[in-house]
Length: 117
Image (cartoon, rainbow, N blue to C red; front, side, top):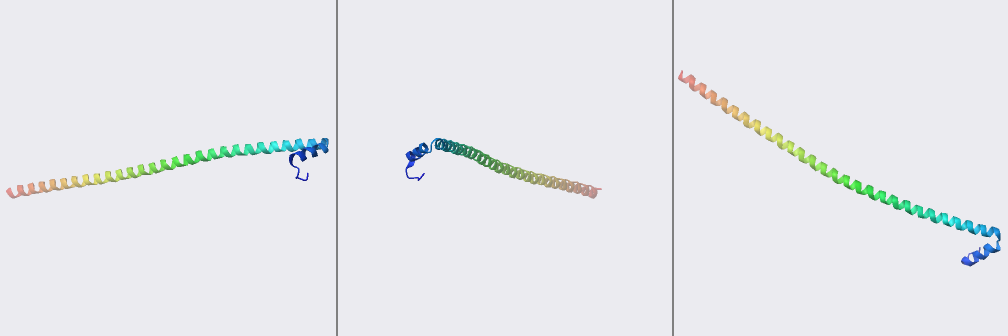
């Protein structure tokens, strides 16, 4: 077709063309149906992929949050461990001081006993 006449001209051309023209136009319709259904399938697939991507984004975000929480918890545990080590060190120092003063007291007692003897 010349393209100027629009739908009606295409219809007439089909009639003028006889049998072959009719078959040609139904083939064109079938191809159009296929194109439309492929396009619809394409958008359905696109929507499905978008949904999957959104879900993955949400999961990634949740995992990042959990990872940050785990890192904070690890920091707290390390801090607690450091505090515990400091407490143990302080307890050791006190015990050593107590032992030293007990030893000094024993030494003083021994010295006193020696001077009396």
